[in-house]
Amino acid sequence: MSKIMVIDDDQDILDLLEQFAVQYGYEFAGAKDGTAGLERIAAEDPDLIILDVMIPSINGFELCRRIRETDIKTPIIILSAKGDIVDKSVGFDVGADDYLVKPFSIEELSLRVKSHLRRQRNLTQGPWDNAGSQAIVIGNLELLPASYEARLNGAPVALSSKEFELMILLASSPGEVFTREQIIRHLWGSSDCADPSSVTVYIRRIREKIEADPAHPRYLLTVWRVGYKLAHGQ
Image 1 (cartoon, rainbow, N blue to C red):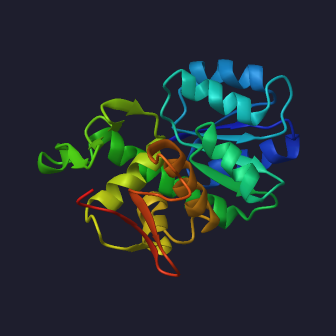
Image 2: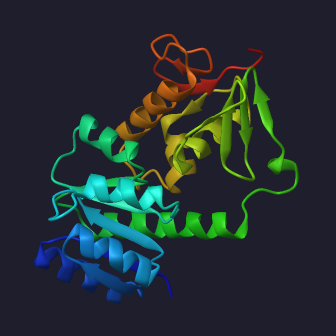
């Protein structure tokens, strides 16, 4: 049985998500501030973490960053009353996998939780076959699927798991255009599980890490009104 850890100082939200967990067959663990949440994550070893941005002692963004610094790969969904792209960018920057804006429906939450848990199981079991585990080299960019590592000019590139998975999708067919919907389905499992603006955030963040000039990308290209592609032969 998968375990969901919720960190939120709003008791109504904790009660609601505990009811959700029971209804959908998950174990539940909760905490009401960042410090307690960090301690309970270590003790509970959850399969998915849901945390609010505005929590006492350690805010949600900082807590997410500290969790990722411990090399915990557990999916993290951030809750916030703000839905603008800047706020989402901050969340993804500190290592969040998803972003859910309040108020949200239980149906939407369920879709996202199921998608992240399913993908996490696939990663744990090893999603890459022998052929797919080989390094992918495009120009000076190297992707290592088996270890989720990226290198540019031989130096490590700190891509998040979802940033890396987006790159692997594009690298599966260099030069081919992938639509936003295809990218969302690949990253979240369903087009119902993510806001299309999240793709924009990921693309921008990847460019900041791999492009010498993100405004004039060499690797990760936009095809206007269609989608994105990874250049080849660079």
